[in-house]
Length: 521
Image (cartoon, rainbow, N blue to C red; front, side, top):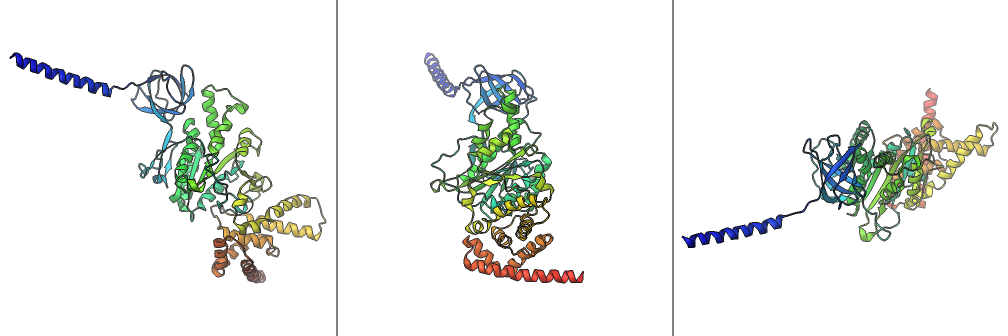
């Protein structure tokens, strides 16, 4: 009996020792904080002394038991100021907070193409969960350095004549679209996305602080034109919390960078950054950061510079991918000297300025060529476009000046009248219906015609009709000329001769047709 009891004691000892060892292996220290106060989407948190800047925190609601993600923004001496990424009204003082050890990130992958998601990558289109997730990327990272880049030298065609000819955009460029409310800023960006249909460019449309109805209309437009197949829509609506609007453009950029580092070309539209700056101002004021000009915090410049600097054309060693950024800024009463517009103008590589007066007078897209500029896109134009569009900008600027002068002058010489007449036809030719982007070879052909005086005898009211008929004629009879321009990228002497012959032939038939119509009338 004694031996049996001794045996049992030794077995018990072994079991206890094993259990103790296993318990020690599983022992894990965890830092748990608590909410001091919650207001306006901001939580003050005590007890997380080792939290990192921009770390994701999990707040557990004592009321519902649900966890809500928060982002650590202010690391103060005795507490953390965190912005809450979700429903904050059910959080209370004393709720537990845990660290995740992760800086804010978003899932990425080809499965996002064709989907509408929020700032955290959660689907918003009712089509179920995202398939084809290939990993995750931090939403706010340091932009690629000098060594990893190469100069912009490849065109990003928008399909808009006025832009591709005079304010060209290259892959990897940051081109600002700026103008008052209701001047067609979103329309220009959507046209640029639609125009990528036959290319290898992946597009991301990021809607910040927009009406849900407007975002839905954009999505439907893209779907109608078959553009959703290669587009991701990231949306933080006007009704969404300020933190979601603040991080939306960074999330969109992270999605684009996933493809860029695979050697692909991407285009990101931020619609618009004015709303993001306002959301950031709201957060900063609630976090009690010192306000500066127009109540914006001191780092509002850095807010946009660290975002837009991520637009780049990677070197061939890095895969040669690109991220082209089209940020949109809304001005008030045409004031481009306001704080946010001047900040973003200084960061970008040029701006497309849309003017209300032009828009209201029927010139659409309402691009003011005088103030608009592209600082690097000229090197990204195809040679054929560079050749034909060289005079276009100057002719248009001269026409604007003469037009103002002609209003006061009664007796104008023949040369001035000719210039005014050609300018009026140029303006008419540059008009373009919404959601009808034009291939670059067609743009070259029609710009050549107008700048070389082949439309001087066409009535101004018939220019749009002439252009439509000319494109149809070229497609039916002279497709080889267009193919030659597109494939070679140049307007050679041979192609120029063929183009002139095609224009003159069409002019004869157009004039005859209109004479017949006039005679019958």
